[in-house]
Length: 127
Image 1 (cartoon, rainbow, N blue to C red):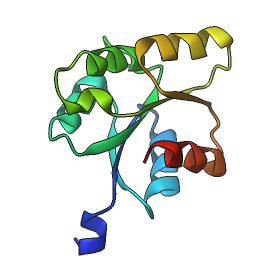
Image 2: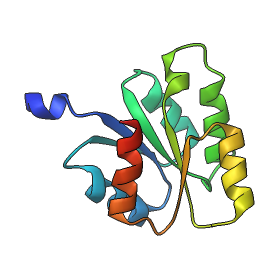
Image 3: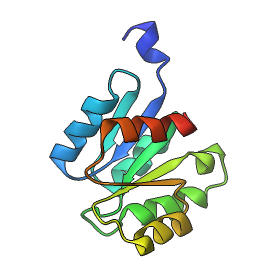
């Protein structure tokens, strides 16, 4: 890994859809170190080292916990990780979805399909 790659901010993409994972990686890989988790337990493991600077979080994940469960868990931590910016991603554009995301601790909200320009503009507000 080059020194430049080592200094790139880490973005964690929590998404269980393979196509969406690949798209997010394509959008981000030139500017960020991208970590991808398909489940909440995997995301928690990837957050353990404290290096993640922003989380892109899908609402709907397979398994016992969804994206908002991860946001709630993160905000209850007793360390610096609880301040990590979270951008919620969902295919639903309902006001209640935005409200639920903010209530769970998300800092921002994007509706899928996400355009690269909108995604990067949102990320740049936080990282």
